[in-house]
Length: 204
Image (cartoon, rainbow, N blue to C red; front, top):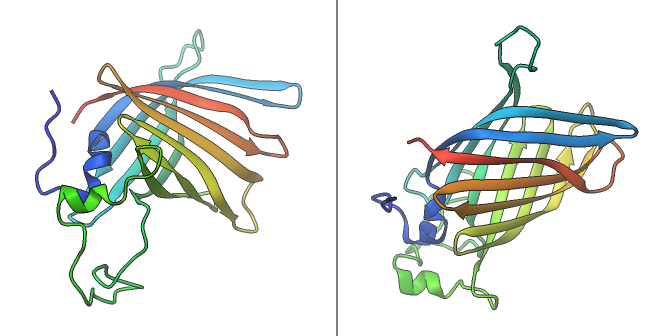
């Protein structure tokens, strides 16, 4: 049974089921022209908090050995890092911009205050910022509703040398204690299409 993390800001309770370290596997399945890339990969995902009203996110994936290759070596594949939070205007009770300290009282100190952020669909709007080391940064908008999260990119920023990547959607859900996820991308001149999915188990 999962216990709510201690010292978790009230604002993060709708996202609390994500907190922990998850590990498992997934399938990469993406077509580029007439070439289909299909591989199994391993995945370790972490959601943590530091007392501020956001979750810290870190993801690491690796390619599993090709069956019959005679090798059991795993190949590092991709990492990404970022922050997840409920969508709301930043007020005087929030620090920033930069390192400027808060000038007022923090507003969302209890469940009643957080309830004022619930949307018309019965969930909570969320913002997610993710950064990839290959020169890509994504800003997602979406919602958490119970044990399900739907996200779609609001903006994708790329450095001059980054590979083509223009949009994405992500889906996360808690099913029988496992974290299931799916990621569709529009990349390398392709329209939005299936890219990868996985099933993870909480290990910490």
